Image 1 (cartoon, rainbow, N blue to C red):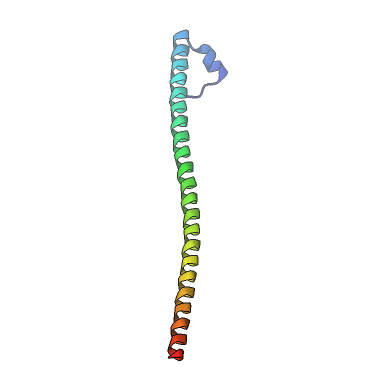
Image 2: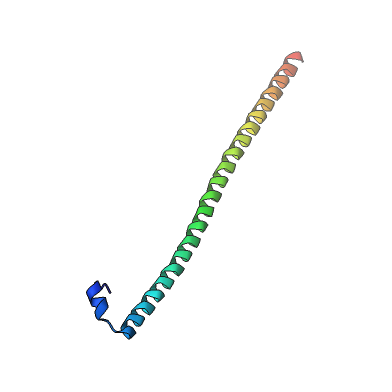
Length: 90
C-alpha cells in the first residue's frame, strides 16, 4: 500500500504501528528470500566451476589417450617392420 505524506499524517498511532509491523515483516521475508537466493547462486557457481574442472580433465585425458594411441600405433608399425624384415631374412 503506497501512501503519500498527507495520508500518513492522518493515521492514528495504532494504524502507524500496524503499518510499521507490516513493513518489518515484509523486510524480514525479503531478507530471508535474499539469503535463499544467495545460497542457490553459490551452489550454481560451484556446479559451473566443477563442470569446468570436469571439462578440463576430459581434455587432458583425451591428450593422454591420443599419446597412448600414437605410441601403440608406432609399436605395431615397428613390430610389422621387424616381422617383414624377419620374413625377408628367411
